[in-house]
Image (tube, rainbow, N blue to C red; front, side, top):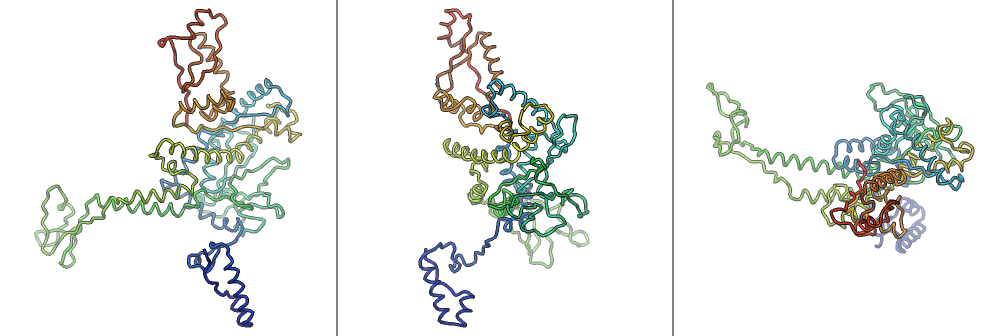
Length: 553
């Protein structure tokens, strides 16, 4: 697309004033460059681009000044707009669910351990971890356990843009561990005394002048928007790390641009269309309500008549008709001379309402990185289309789950692990001395709820075939199908198989979808006749194994 004719700028006019020849050469050079090509989207003279004003600022310059208002409006939409609140709740539920569970995976090659040693150490570690993580005393306020704090951190980050977690050491609830977590809303971190932002202090974060790394955070002693009418509040600087290098505060946000210091609410790109859609919806609902009430207006040619004042009393004064005039089935109502009625007909419900709202919501869904069907929780297309939407959404939820693991779960686990080793409750030689050993001990996987399935039989059959072809492991299959740990439930599975054999029941029924069943171990004292019966059992004797149950929400 060709650019429009080049217009002289202020500099061109100044040059032309002093030297018309030089001004003409300057204008011709600019016209020649414009004619040679370039991006039409960068044109400042095209009619469609003339009123598009942009700024080439840094990430913090574009973000920080707008953050307070973005947070306020994002929170208001979540509270009062069903689509915004539903979208946020859906993301939190699908990403966090019942919580990301710890599955330790120590690097046994680095540690030089056998598989049996790893299994024993892992079992002991999980017992100690559950002692702390499943207690409400891991929360400084004593309200939530570790899995509830996961949801709080993730929800607050989506809603406000970023969240902070302090890691103080206090003695609480009789636990052997002193580590506690204090989650702070984004407003609790800001410049002391309302000072202006600079290149090294941005919205309460002090940065290194050379590297841009966060050195410390200024935390207010209370929320600036608290219930107290006293708006004078103090704060303190919290270092980003302790003298030994462990984190003293965690900053949870998604960095979208290099050099970005604070996070932006997830709803920020769609705040305006969400608000406008809410206003339009409210107007349509009110119009439908008015239409349903069958509103009647009384028109009169007389002086200063009140539709609610109908008739006169014995003295001739107007009499209120609020109790005497009613719209009833087949009612005949007399009007005064010169009066007529006008019926309000807003033509509602509006037949174009649903297509228009759906078109707007499709754009909102793209802005929120959610498939439209998942956003509105309405699957009206085919099975393939619904499955494609769920798979696309699961990729989004998996990415957010990985962010939560890196930003919150793993750092907290490493901080707890350090205290557990220092207390002698976890045996980890070299943990406090060698960073490589520390990394080997702290290696872990965090698993969440499974994505669910539209056709469990087909999916289980596909995983069974993948396992038989050595393309996947049972651990992968169980994690993807049900969100559970294969190794954690292995003892229970072995016990159930043993109980079934002792009861004379089938251990390995046919796999779903006709896939080949796994070989089932047989009792040692089984007779030849019993073996023949087991090879081809009667239909009445065959006992079907119930389908695996998905984890509870």
